Image (tube, rainbow, N blue to C red):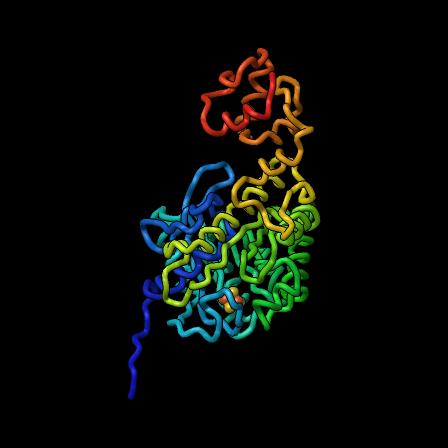
Length: 379
Ligand code: SF4
């Protein structure tokens, strides 16, 4: 029997390719619980993002190809999967992006891909798209390029020379964990060494110092603990100049034609999304609140509490630190108080410059967060 499969046009390809791109979060996408998985109204390949100034905009985000020779256990596109495969050409990707850009539907481009042939052949394709946008169409705006694991140093450097931001997903904390989910990727050669190379090439004072590097862990696919992830996260920020670390909860049925576990309501899937959320909270504590990875508290199995946020768990473990006097405490100490975020701490510092703070209401309207904070402060 001869089966006739129609050749998809550009928009059909984008339907297919952008659907799976939503699970790659290592870009400027928001990091609140579900914001980063939401897709735009104007097209499924458009994703909302949070800008550095706190505003929001939209990215044109797609895979260039969903063909892949690899076998990552958590991925719906791994070679053995029976999915409809297609690939965008360099010119059609550039043109469709520019069409959306010119109609002011998007502010930038995020490109990723399955491994089409070899890592370098795939990286070259992504680079070629960025290159014609930069040179032929004089596009100077935001381009995020996914670095394909296993790419050569030369291909990586070319990507950095063309992009605003790059990312290579670290996936797991350590080689042993990666071996559980992929037989083809070599943790040191394909992931860690390239991340180090990007870090060197984009370090302060270097030629590409303006280019940001981000990465992503897949959470729950390799039996890893939160403690392992947080230890690696600390190293990425402290030693490798990482701009942001993202987390993507492993969704067991993804790509099997079933609903995401979240929608199916299974208990385990609710836990995995809460776990992902807790890791984002830890990420904020490390980047913005002066915590070190060694400050984060886990249970005996290396897990973060699902019931309490990590700052509250830390406060419960350190009763000697409280109450904190909010008229005298340093900014660093104020940031340790559960319920107080960056904005409220800023407000406290401003308020106490002019007058003594005498009651919690002097800081702002008392809601759940200030109510929580009131248990840890005095005046
Ligand atoms: S290399 Fe990427 S696209 Fe290919 S199977 Fe692994 S995660 Fe999926």
